[in-house]
Length: 177
Image (cartoon, one colour):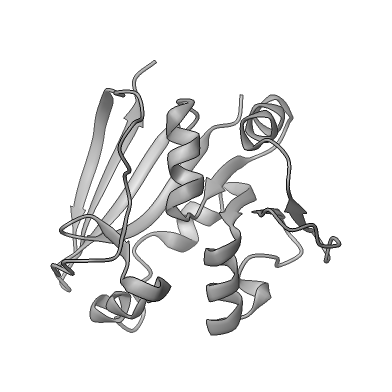
């Protein structure tokens, strides 16, 4: 069965974005030639789940090809119907049903790239199997929290921790069955 992995960065105080969906704090750890395992991680996935606000931000900053490179399916979770573009589907249905369907199909793993609403909906239903969280050495004090209240407790199993010259620390856990 395919697994759903969260690969995301947050501040030390738990924020994945500053107010107004500002991700500029990620630039603090930009380093030439260092991708923090992203290329290796994405080589093992063929499907991406992403919230519309995160998708729009990345498309505006980097371009749609960051997600839809012709090699993988992209599901943008949204409340507004839009026509499919390439392998990008704007999905307005039940996210739990979508994930259960995708996990039952053949293929590589599934990558959730945020945002917080999508992540927390998946956590409510214990659908995230693997957590790779990069902690950026900054205290933002305000913004969008990675983890919201009112979700079930989930015990995780430690896999590894990696540290980098930039001060970024990457935590890797899997959900205990």
